[in-house]
Length: 407
Image (cartoon, rainbow, N blue to C red; front, side, top):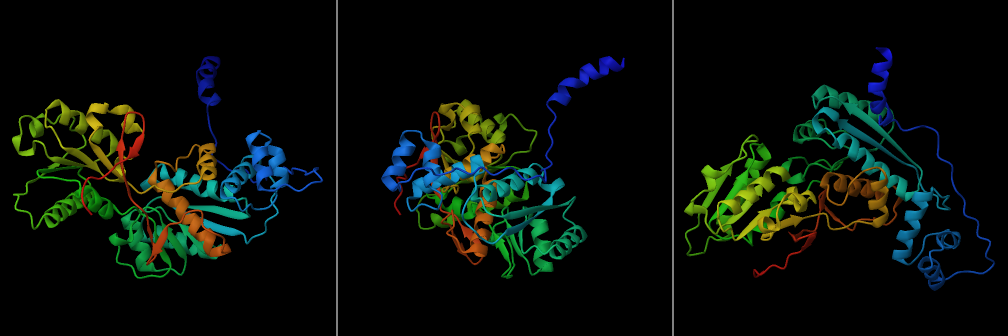
């Protein structure tokens, strides 16, 4: 019987994973330059074009003026764990992680922070402070411990509840919330920074593409309801001088609902209108397929950041999504950071929380060392102001959407 149990358990043991980071430092690789001649920008490019990576690295021992070559240099320094002749202050960052509240983001935001610091190839210390829930006591105790450990910079992927508690405590720590937009807070603290996507700004841009009737789908969450109310208000405000009788229809879709026949079939009130989907990706795919099924002839389907996800391309038919417009704020990225994240199984191309976490670590890195930021994102009143681009999901990828509306 024992042998049988071991045989059955063997596949699970084979694929078991450990997420503990070893305290044994990885060996550094030193690329020796044996070439007696100097190598200019053109020479370095020839090495790259011919695939002579280590010849390139031997000459590129210091930062390069050519931005493209410098990105390549940093990528290989990170991949091969090379020695770098650049000295800077050690960046020490604490992560405040309410792991029961944020689920997988406890791991992915840690990976995003680690990937950025690893790619920079500078001395750093990254320490996690895990709390079960966002209670005042849990958060207060964690902040006290962070101060005792002499950390000055904190990445805190909290919910609105946790942010409110920290705002009231107002600790003299530089704390960055990648999950919260400052418009949703009342804080005036100079120590608190915000990196959350601005769904209102995205909605404002999308509303310019909307026509009446405006049909708004949202889930039962507070955020979904609040955003839907905002979109209705802005749509009416945007068309206040119009002679057209505006129609706005809102549908709250419970999680368990999978059939929208009651809402859509032969409903002339919503025919040929614009449709907002303030729902998670799976629910949005279901809504879009049934808009086609019940011949609503929607003019367009509008979505904020929530549905900027490659899963949309595989789970929906092109016929269902061809008139979809998505507002996207993930507009800047560096190849070296993308690839370093991929090594850790992390995504900063589509996952906005991982992306905003990376932007926050980059900002703190700049504050400490004064080095040029990787992300040219404006910071206004301690809030990251992300550019917004409108995209369309085409057959195989997301493409730029050319707006036909007047500015």
